[in-house]
Length: 189
Image (cartoon, rainbow, N blue to C red; front, side):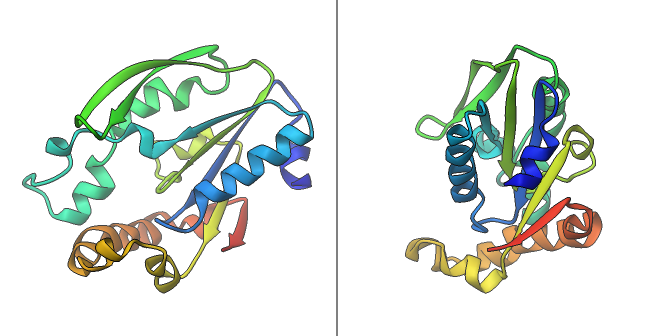
């Protein structure tokens, strides 16, 4: 906590919480946010999975499943332009939020307090398109078998989807981006 608070010297701190699926990012961010509020530090949190694209744009495309997950799950350039490039200065951002019930994107306006710690949590945050917008990145490192145990029973039944979609994309990220080597802090979860 002190390491993060020591970075917060100006109006905003843009903090990334990176880690693979089920590594504990959301739980960590909730606890961190609560602690920062106890320190009377304003917090604004963005969850990357709130901004995935519609199913037709990320499933059953001409690409391999791992590629769909890594490259098509989010509109990477849109998020770069509409979110990441504005985190240090914008008072408001307009972003697409995914509504899973109707499989549609809904544009919402988010107000960002001037004097706050902005926390962005999600998988693949250190991809080249986004990495430079963070002032500090925490990577939650958790073994694959432990993360898989956190999945629902129904999700575990489709292990082939994990092998061909999620795990291949994670391996690509680990091998090509080296998030552990590039993070400012690593926490084992």
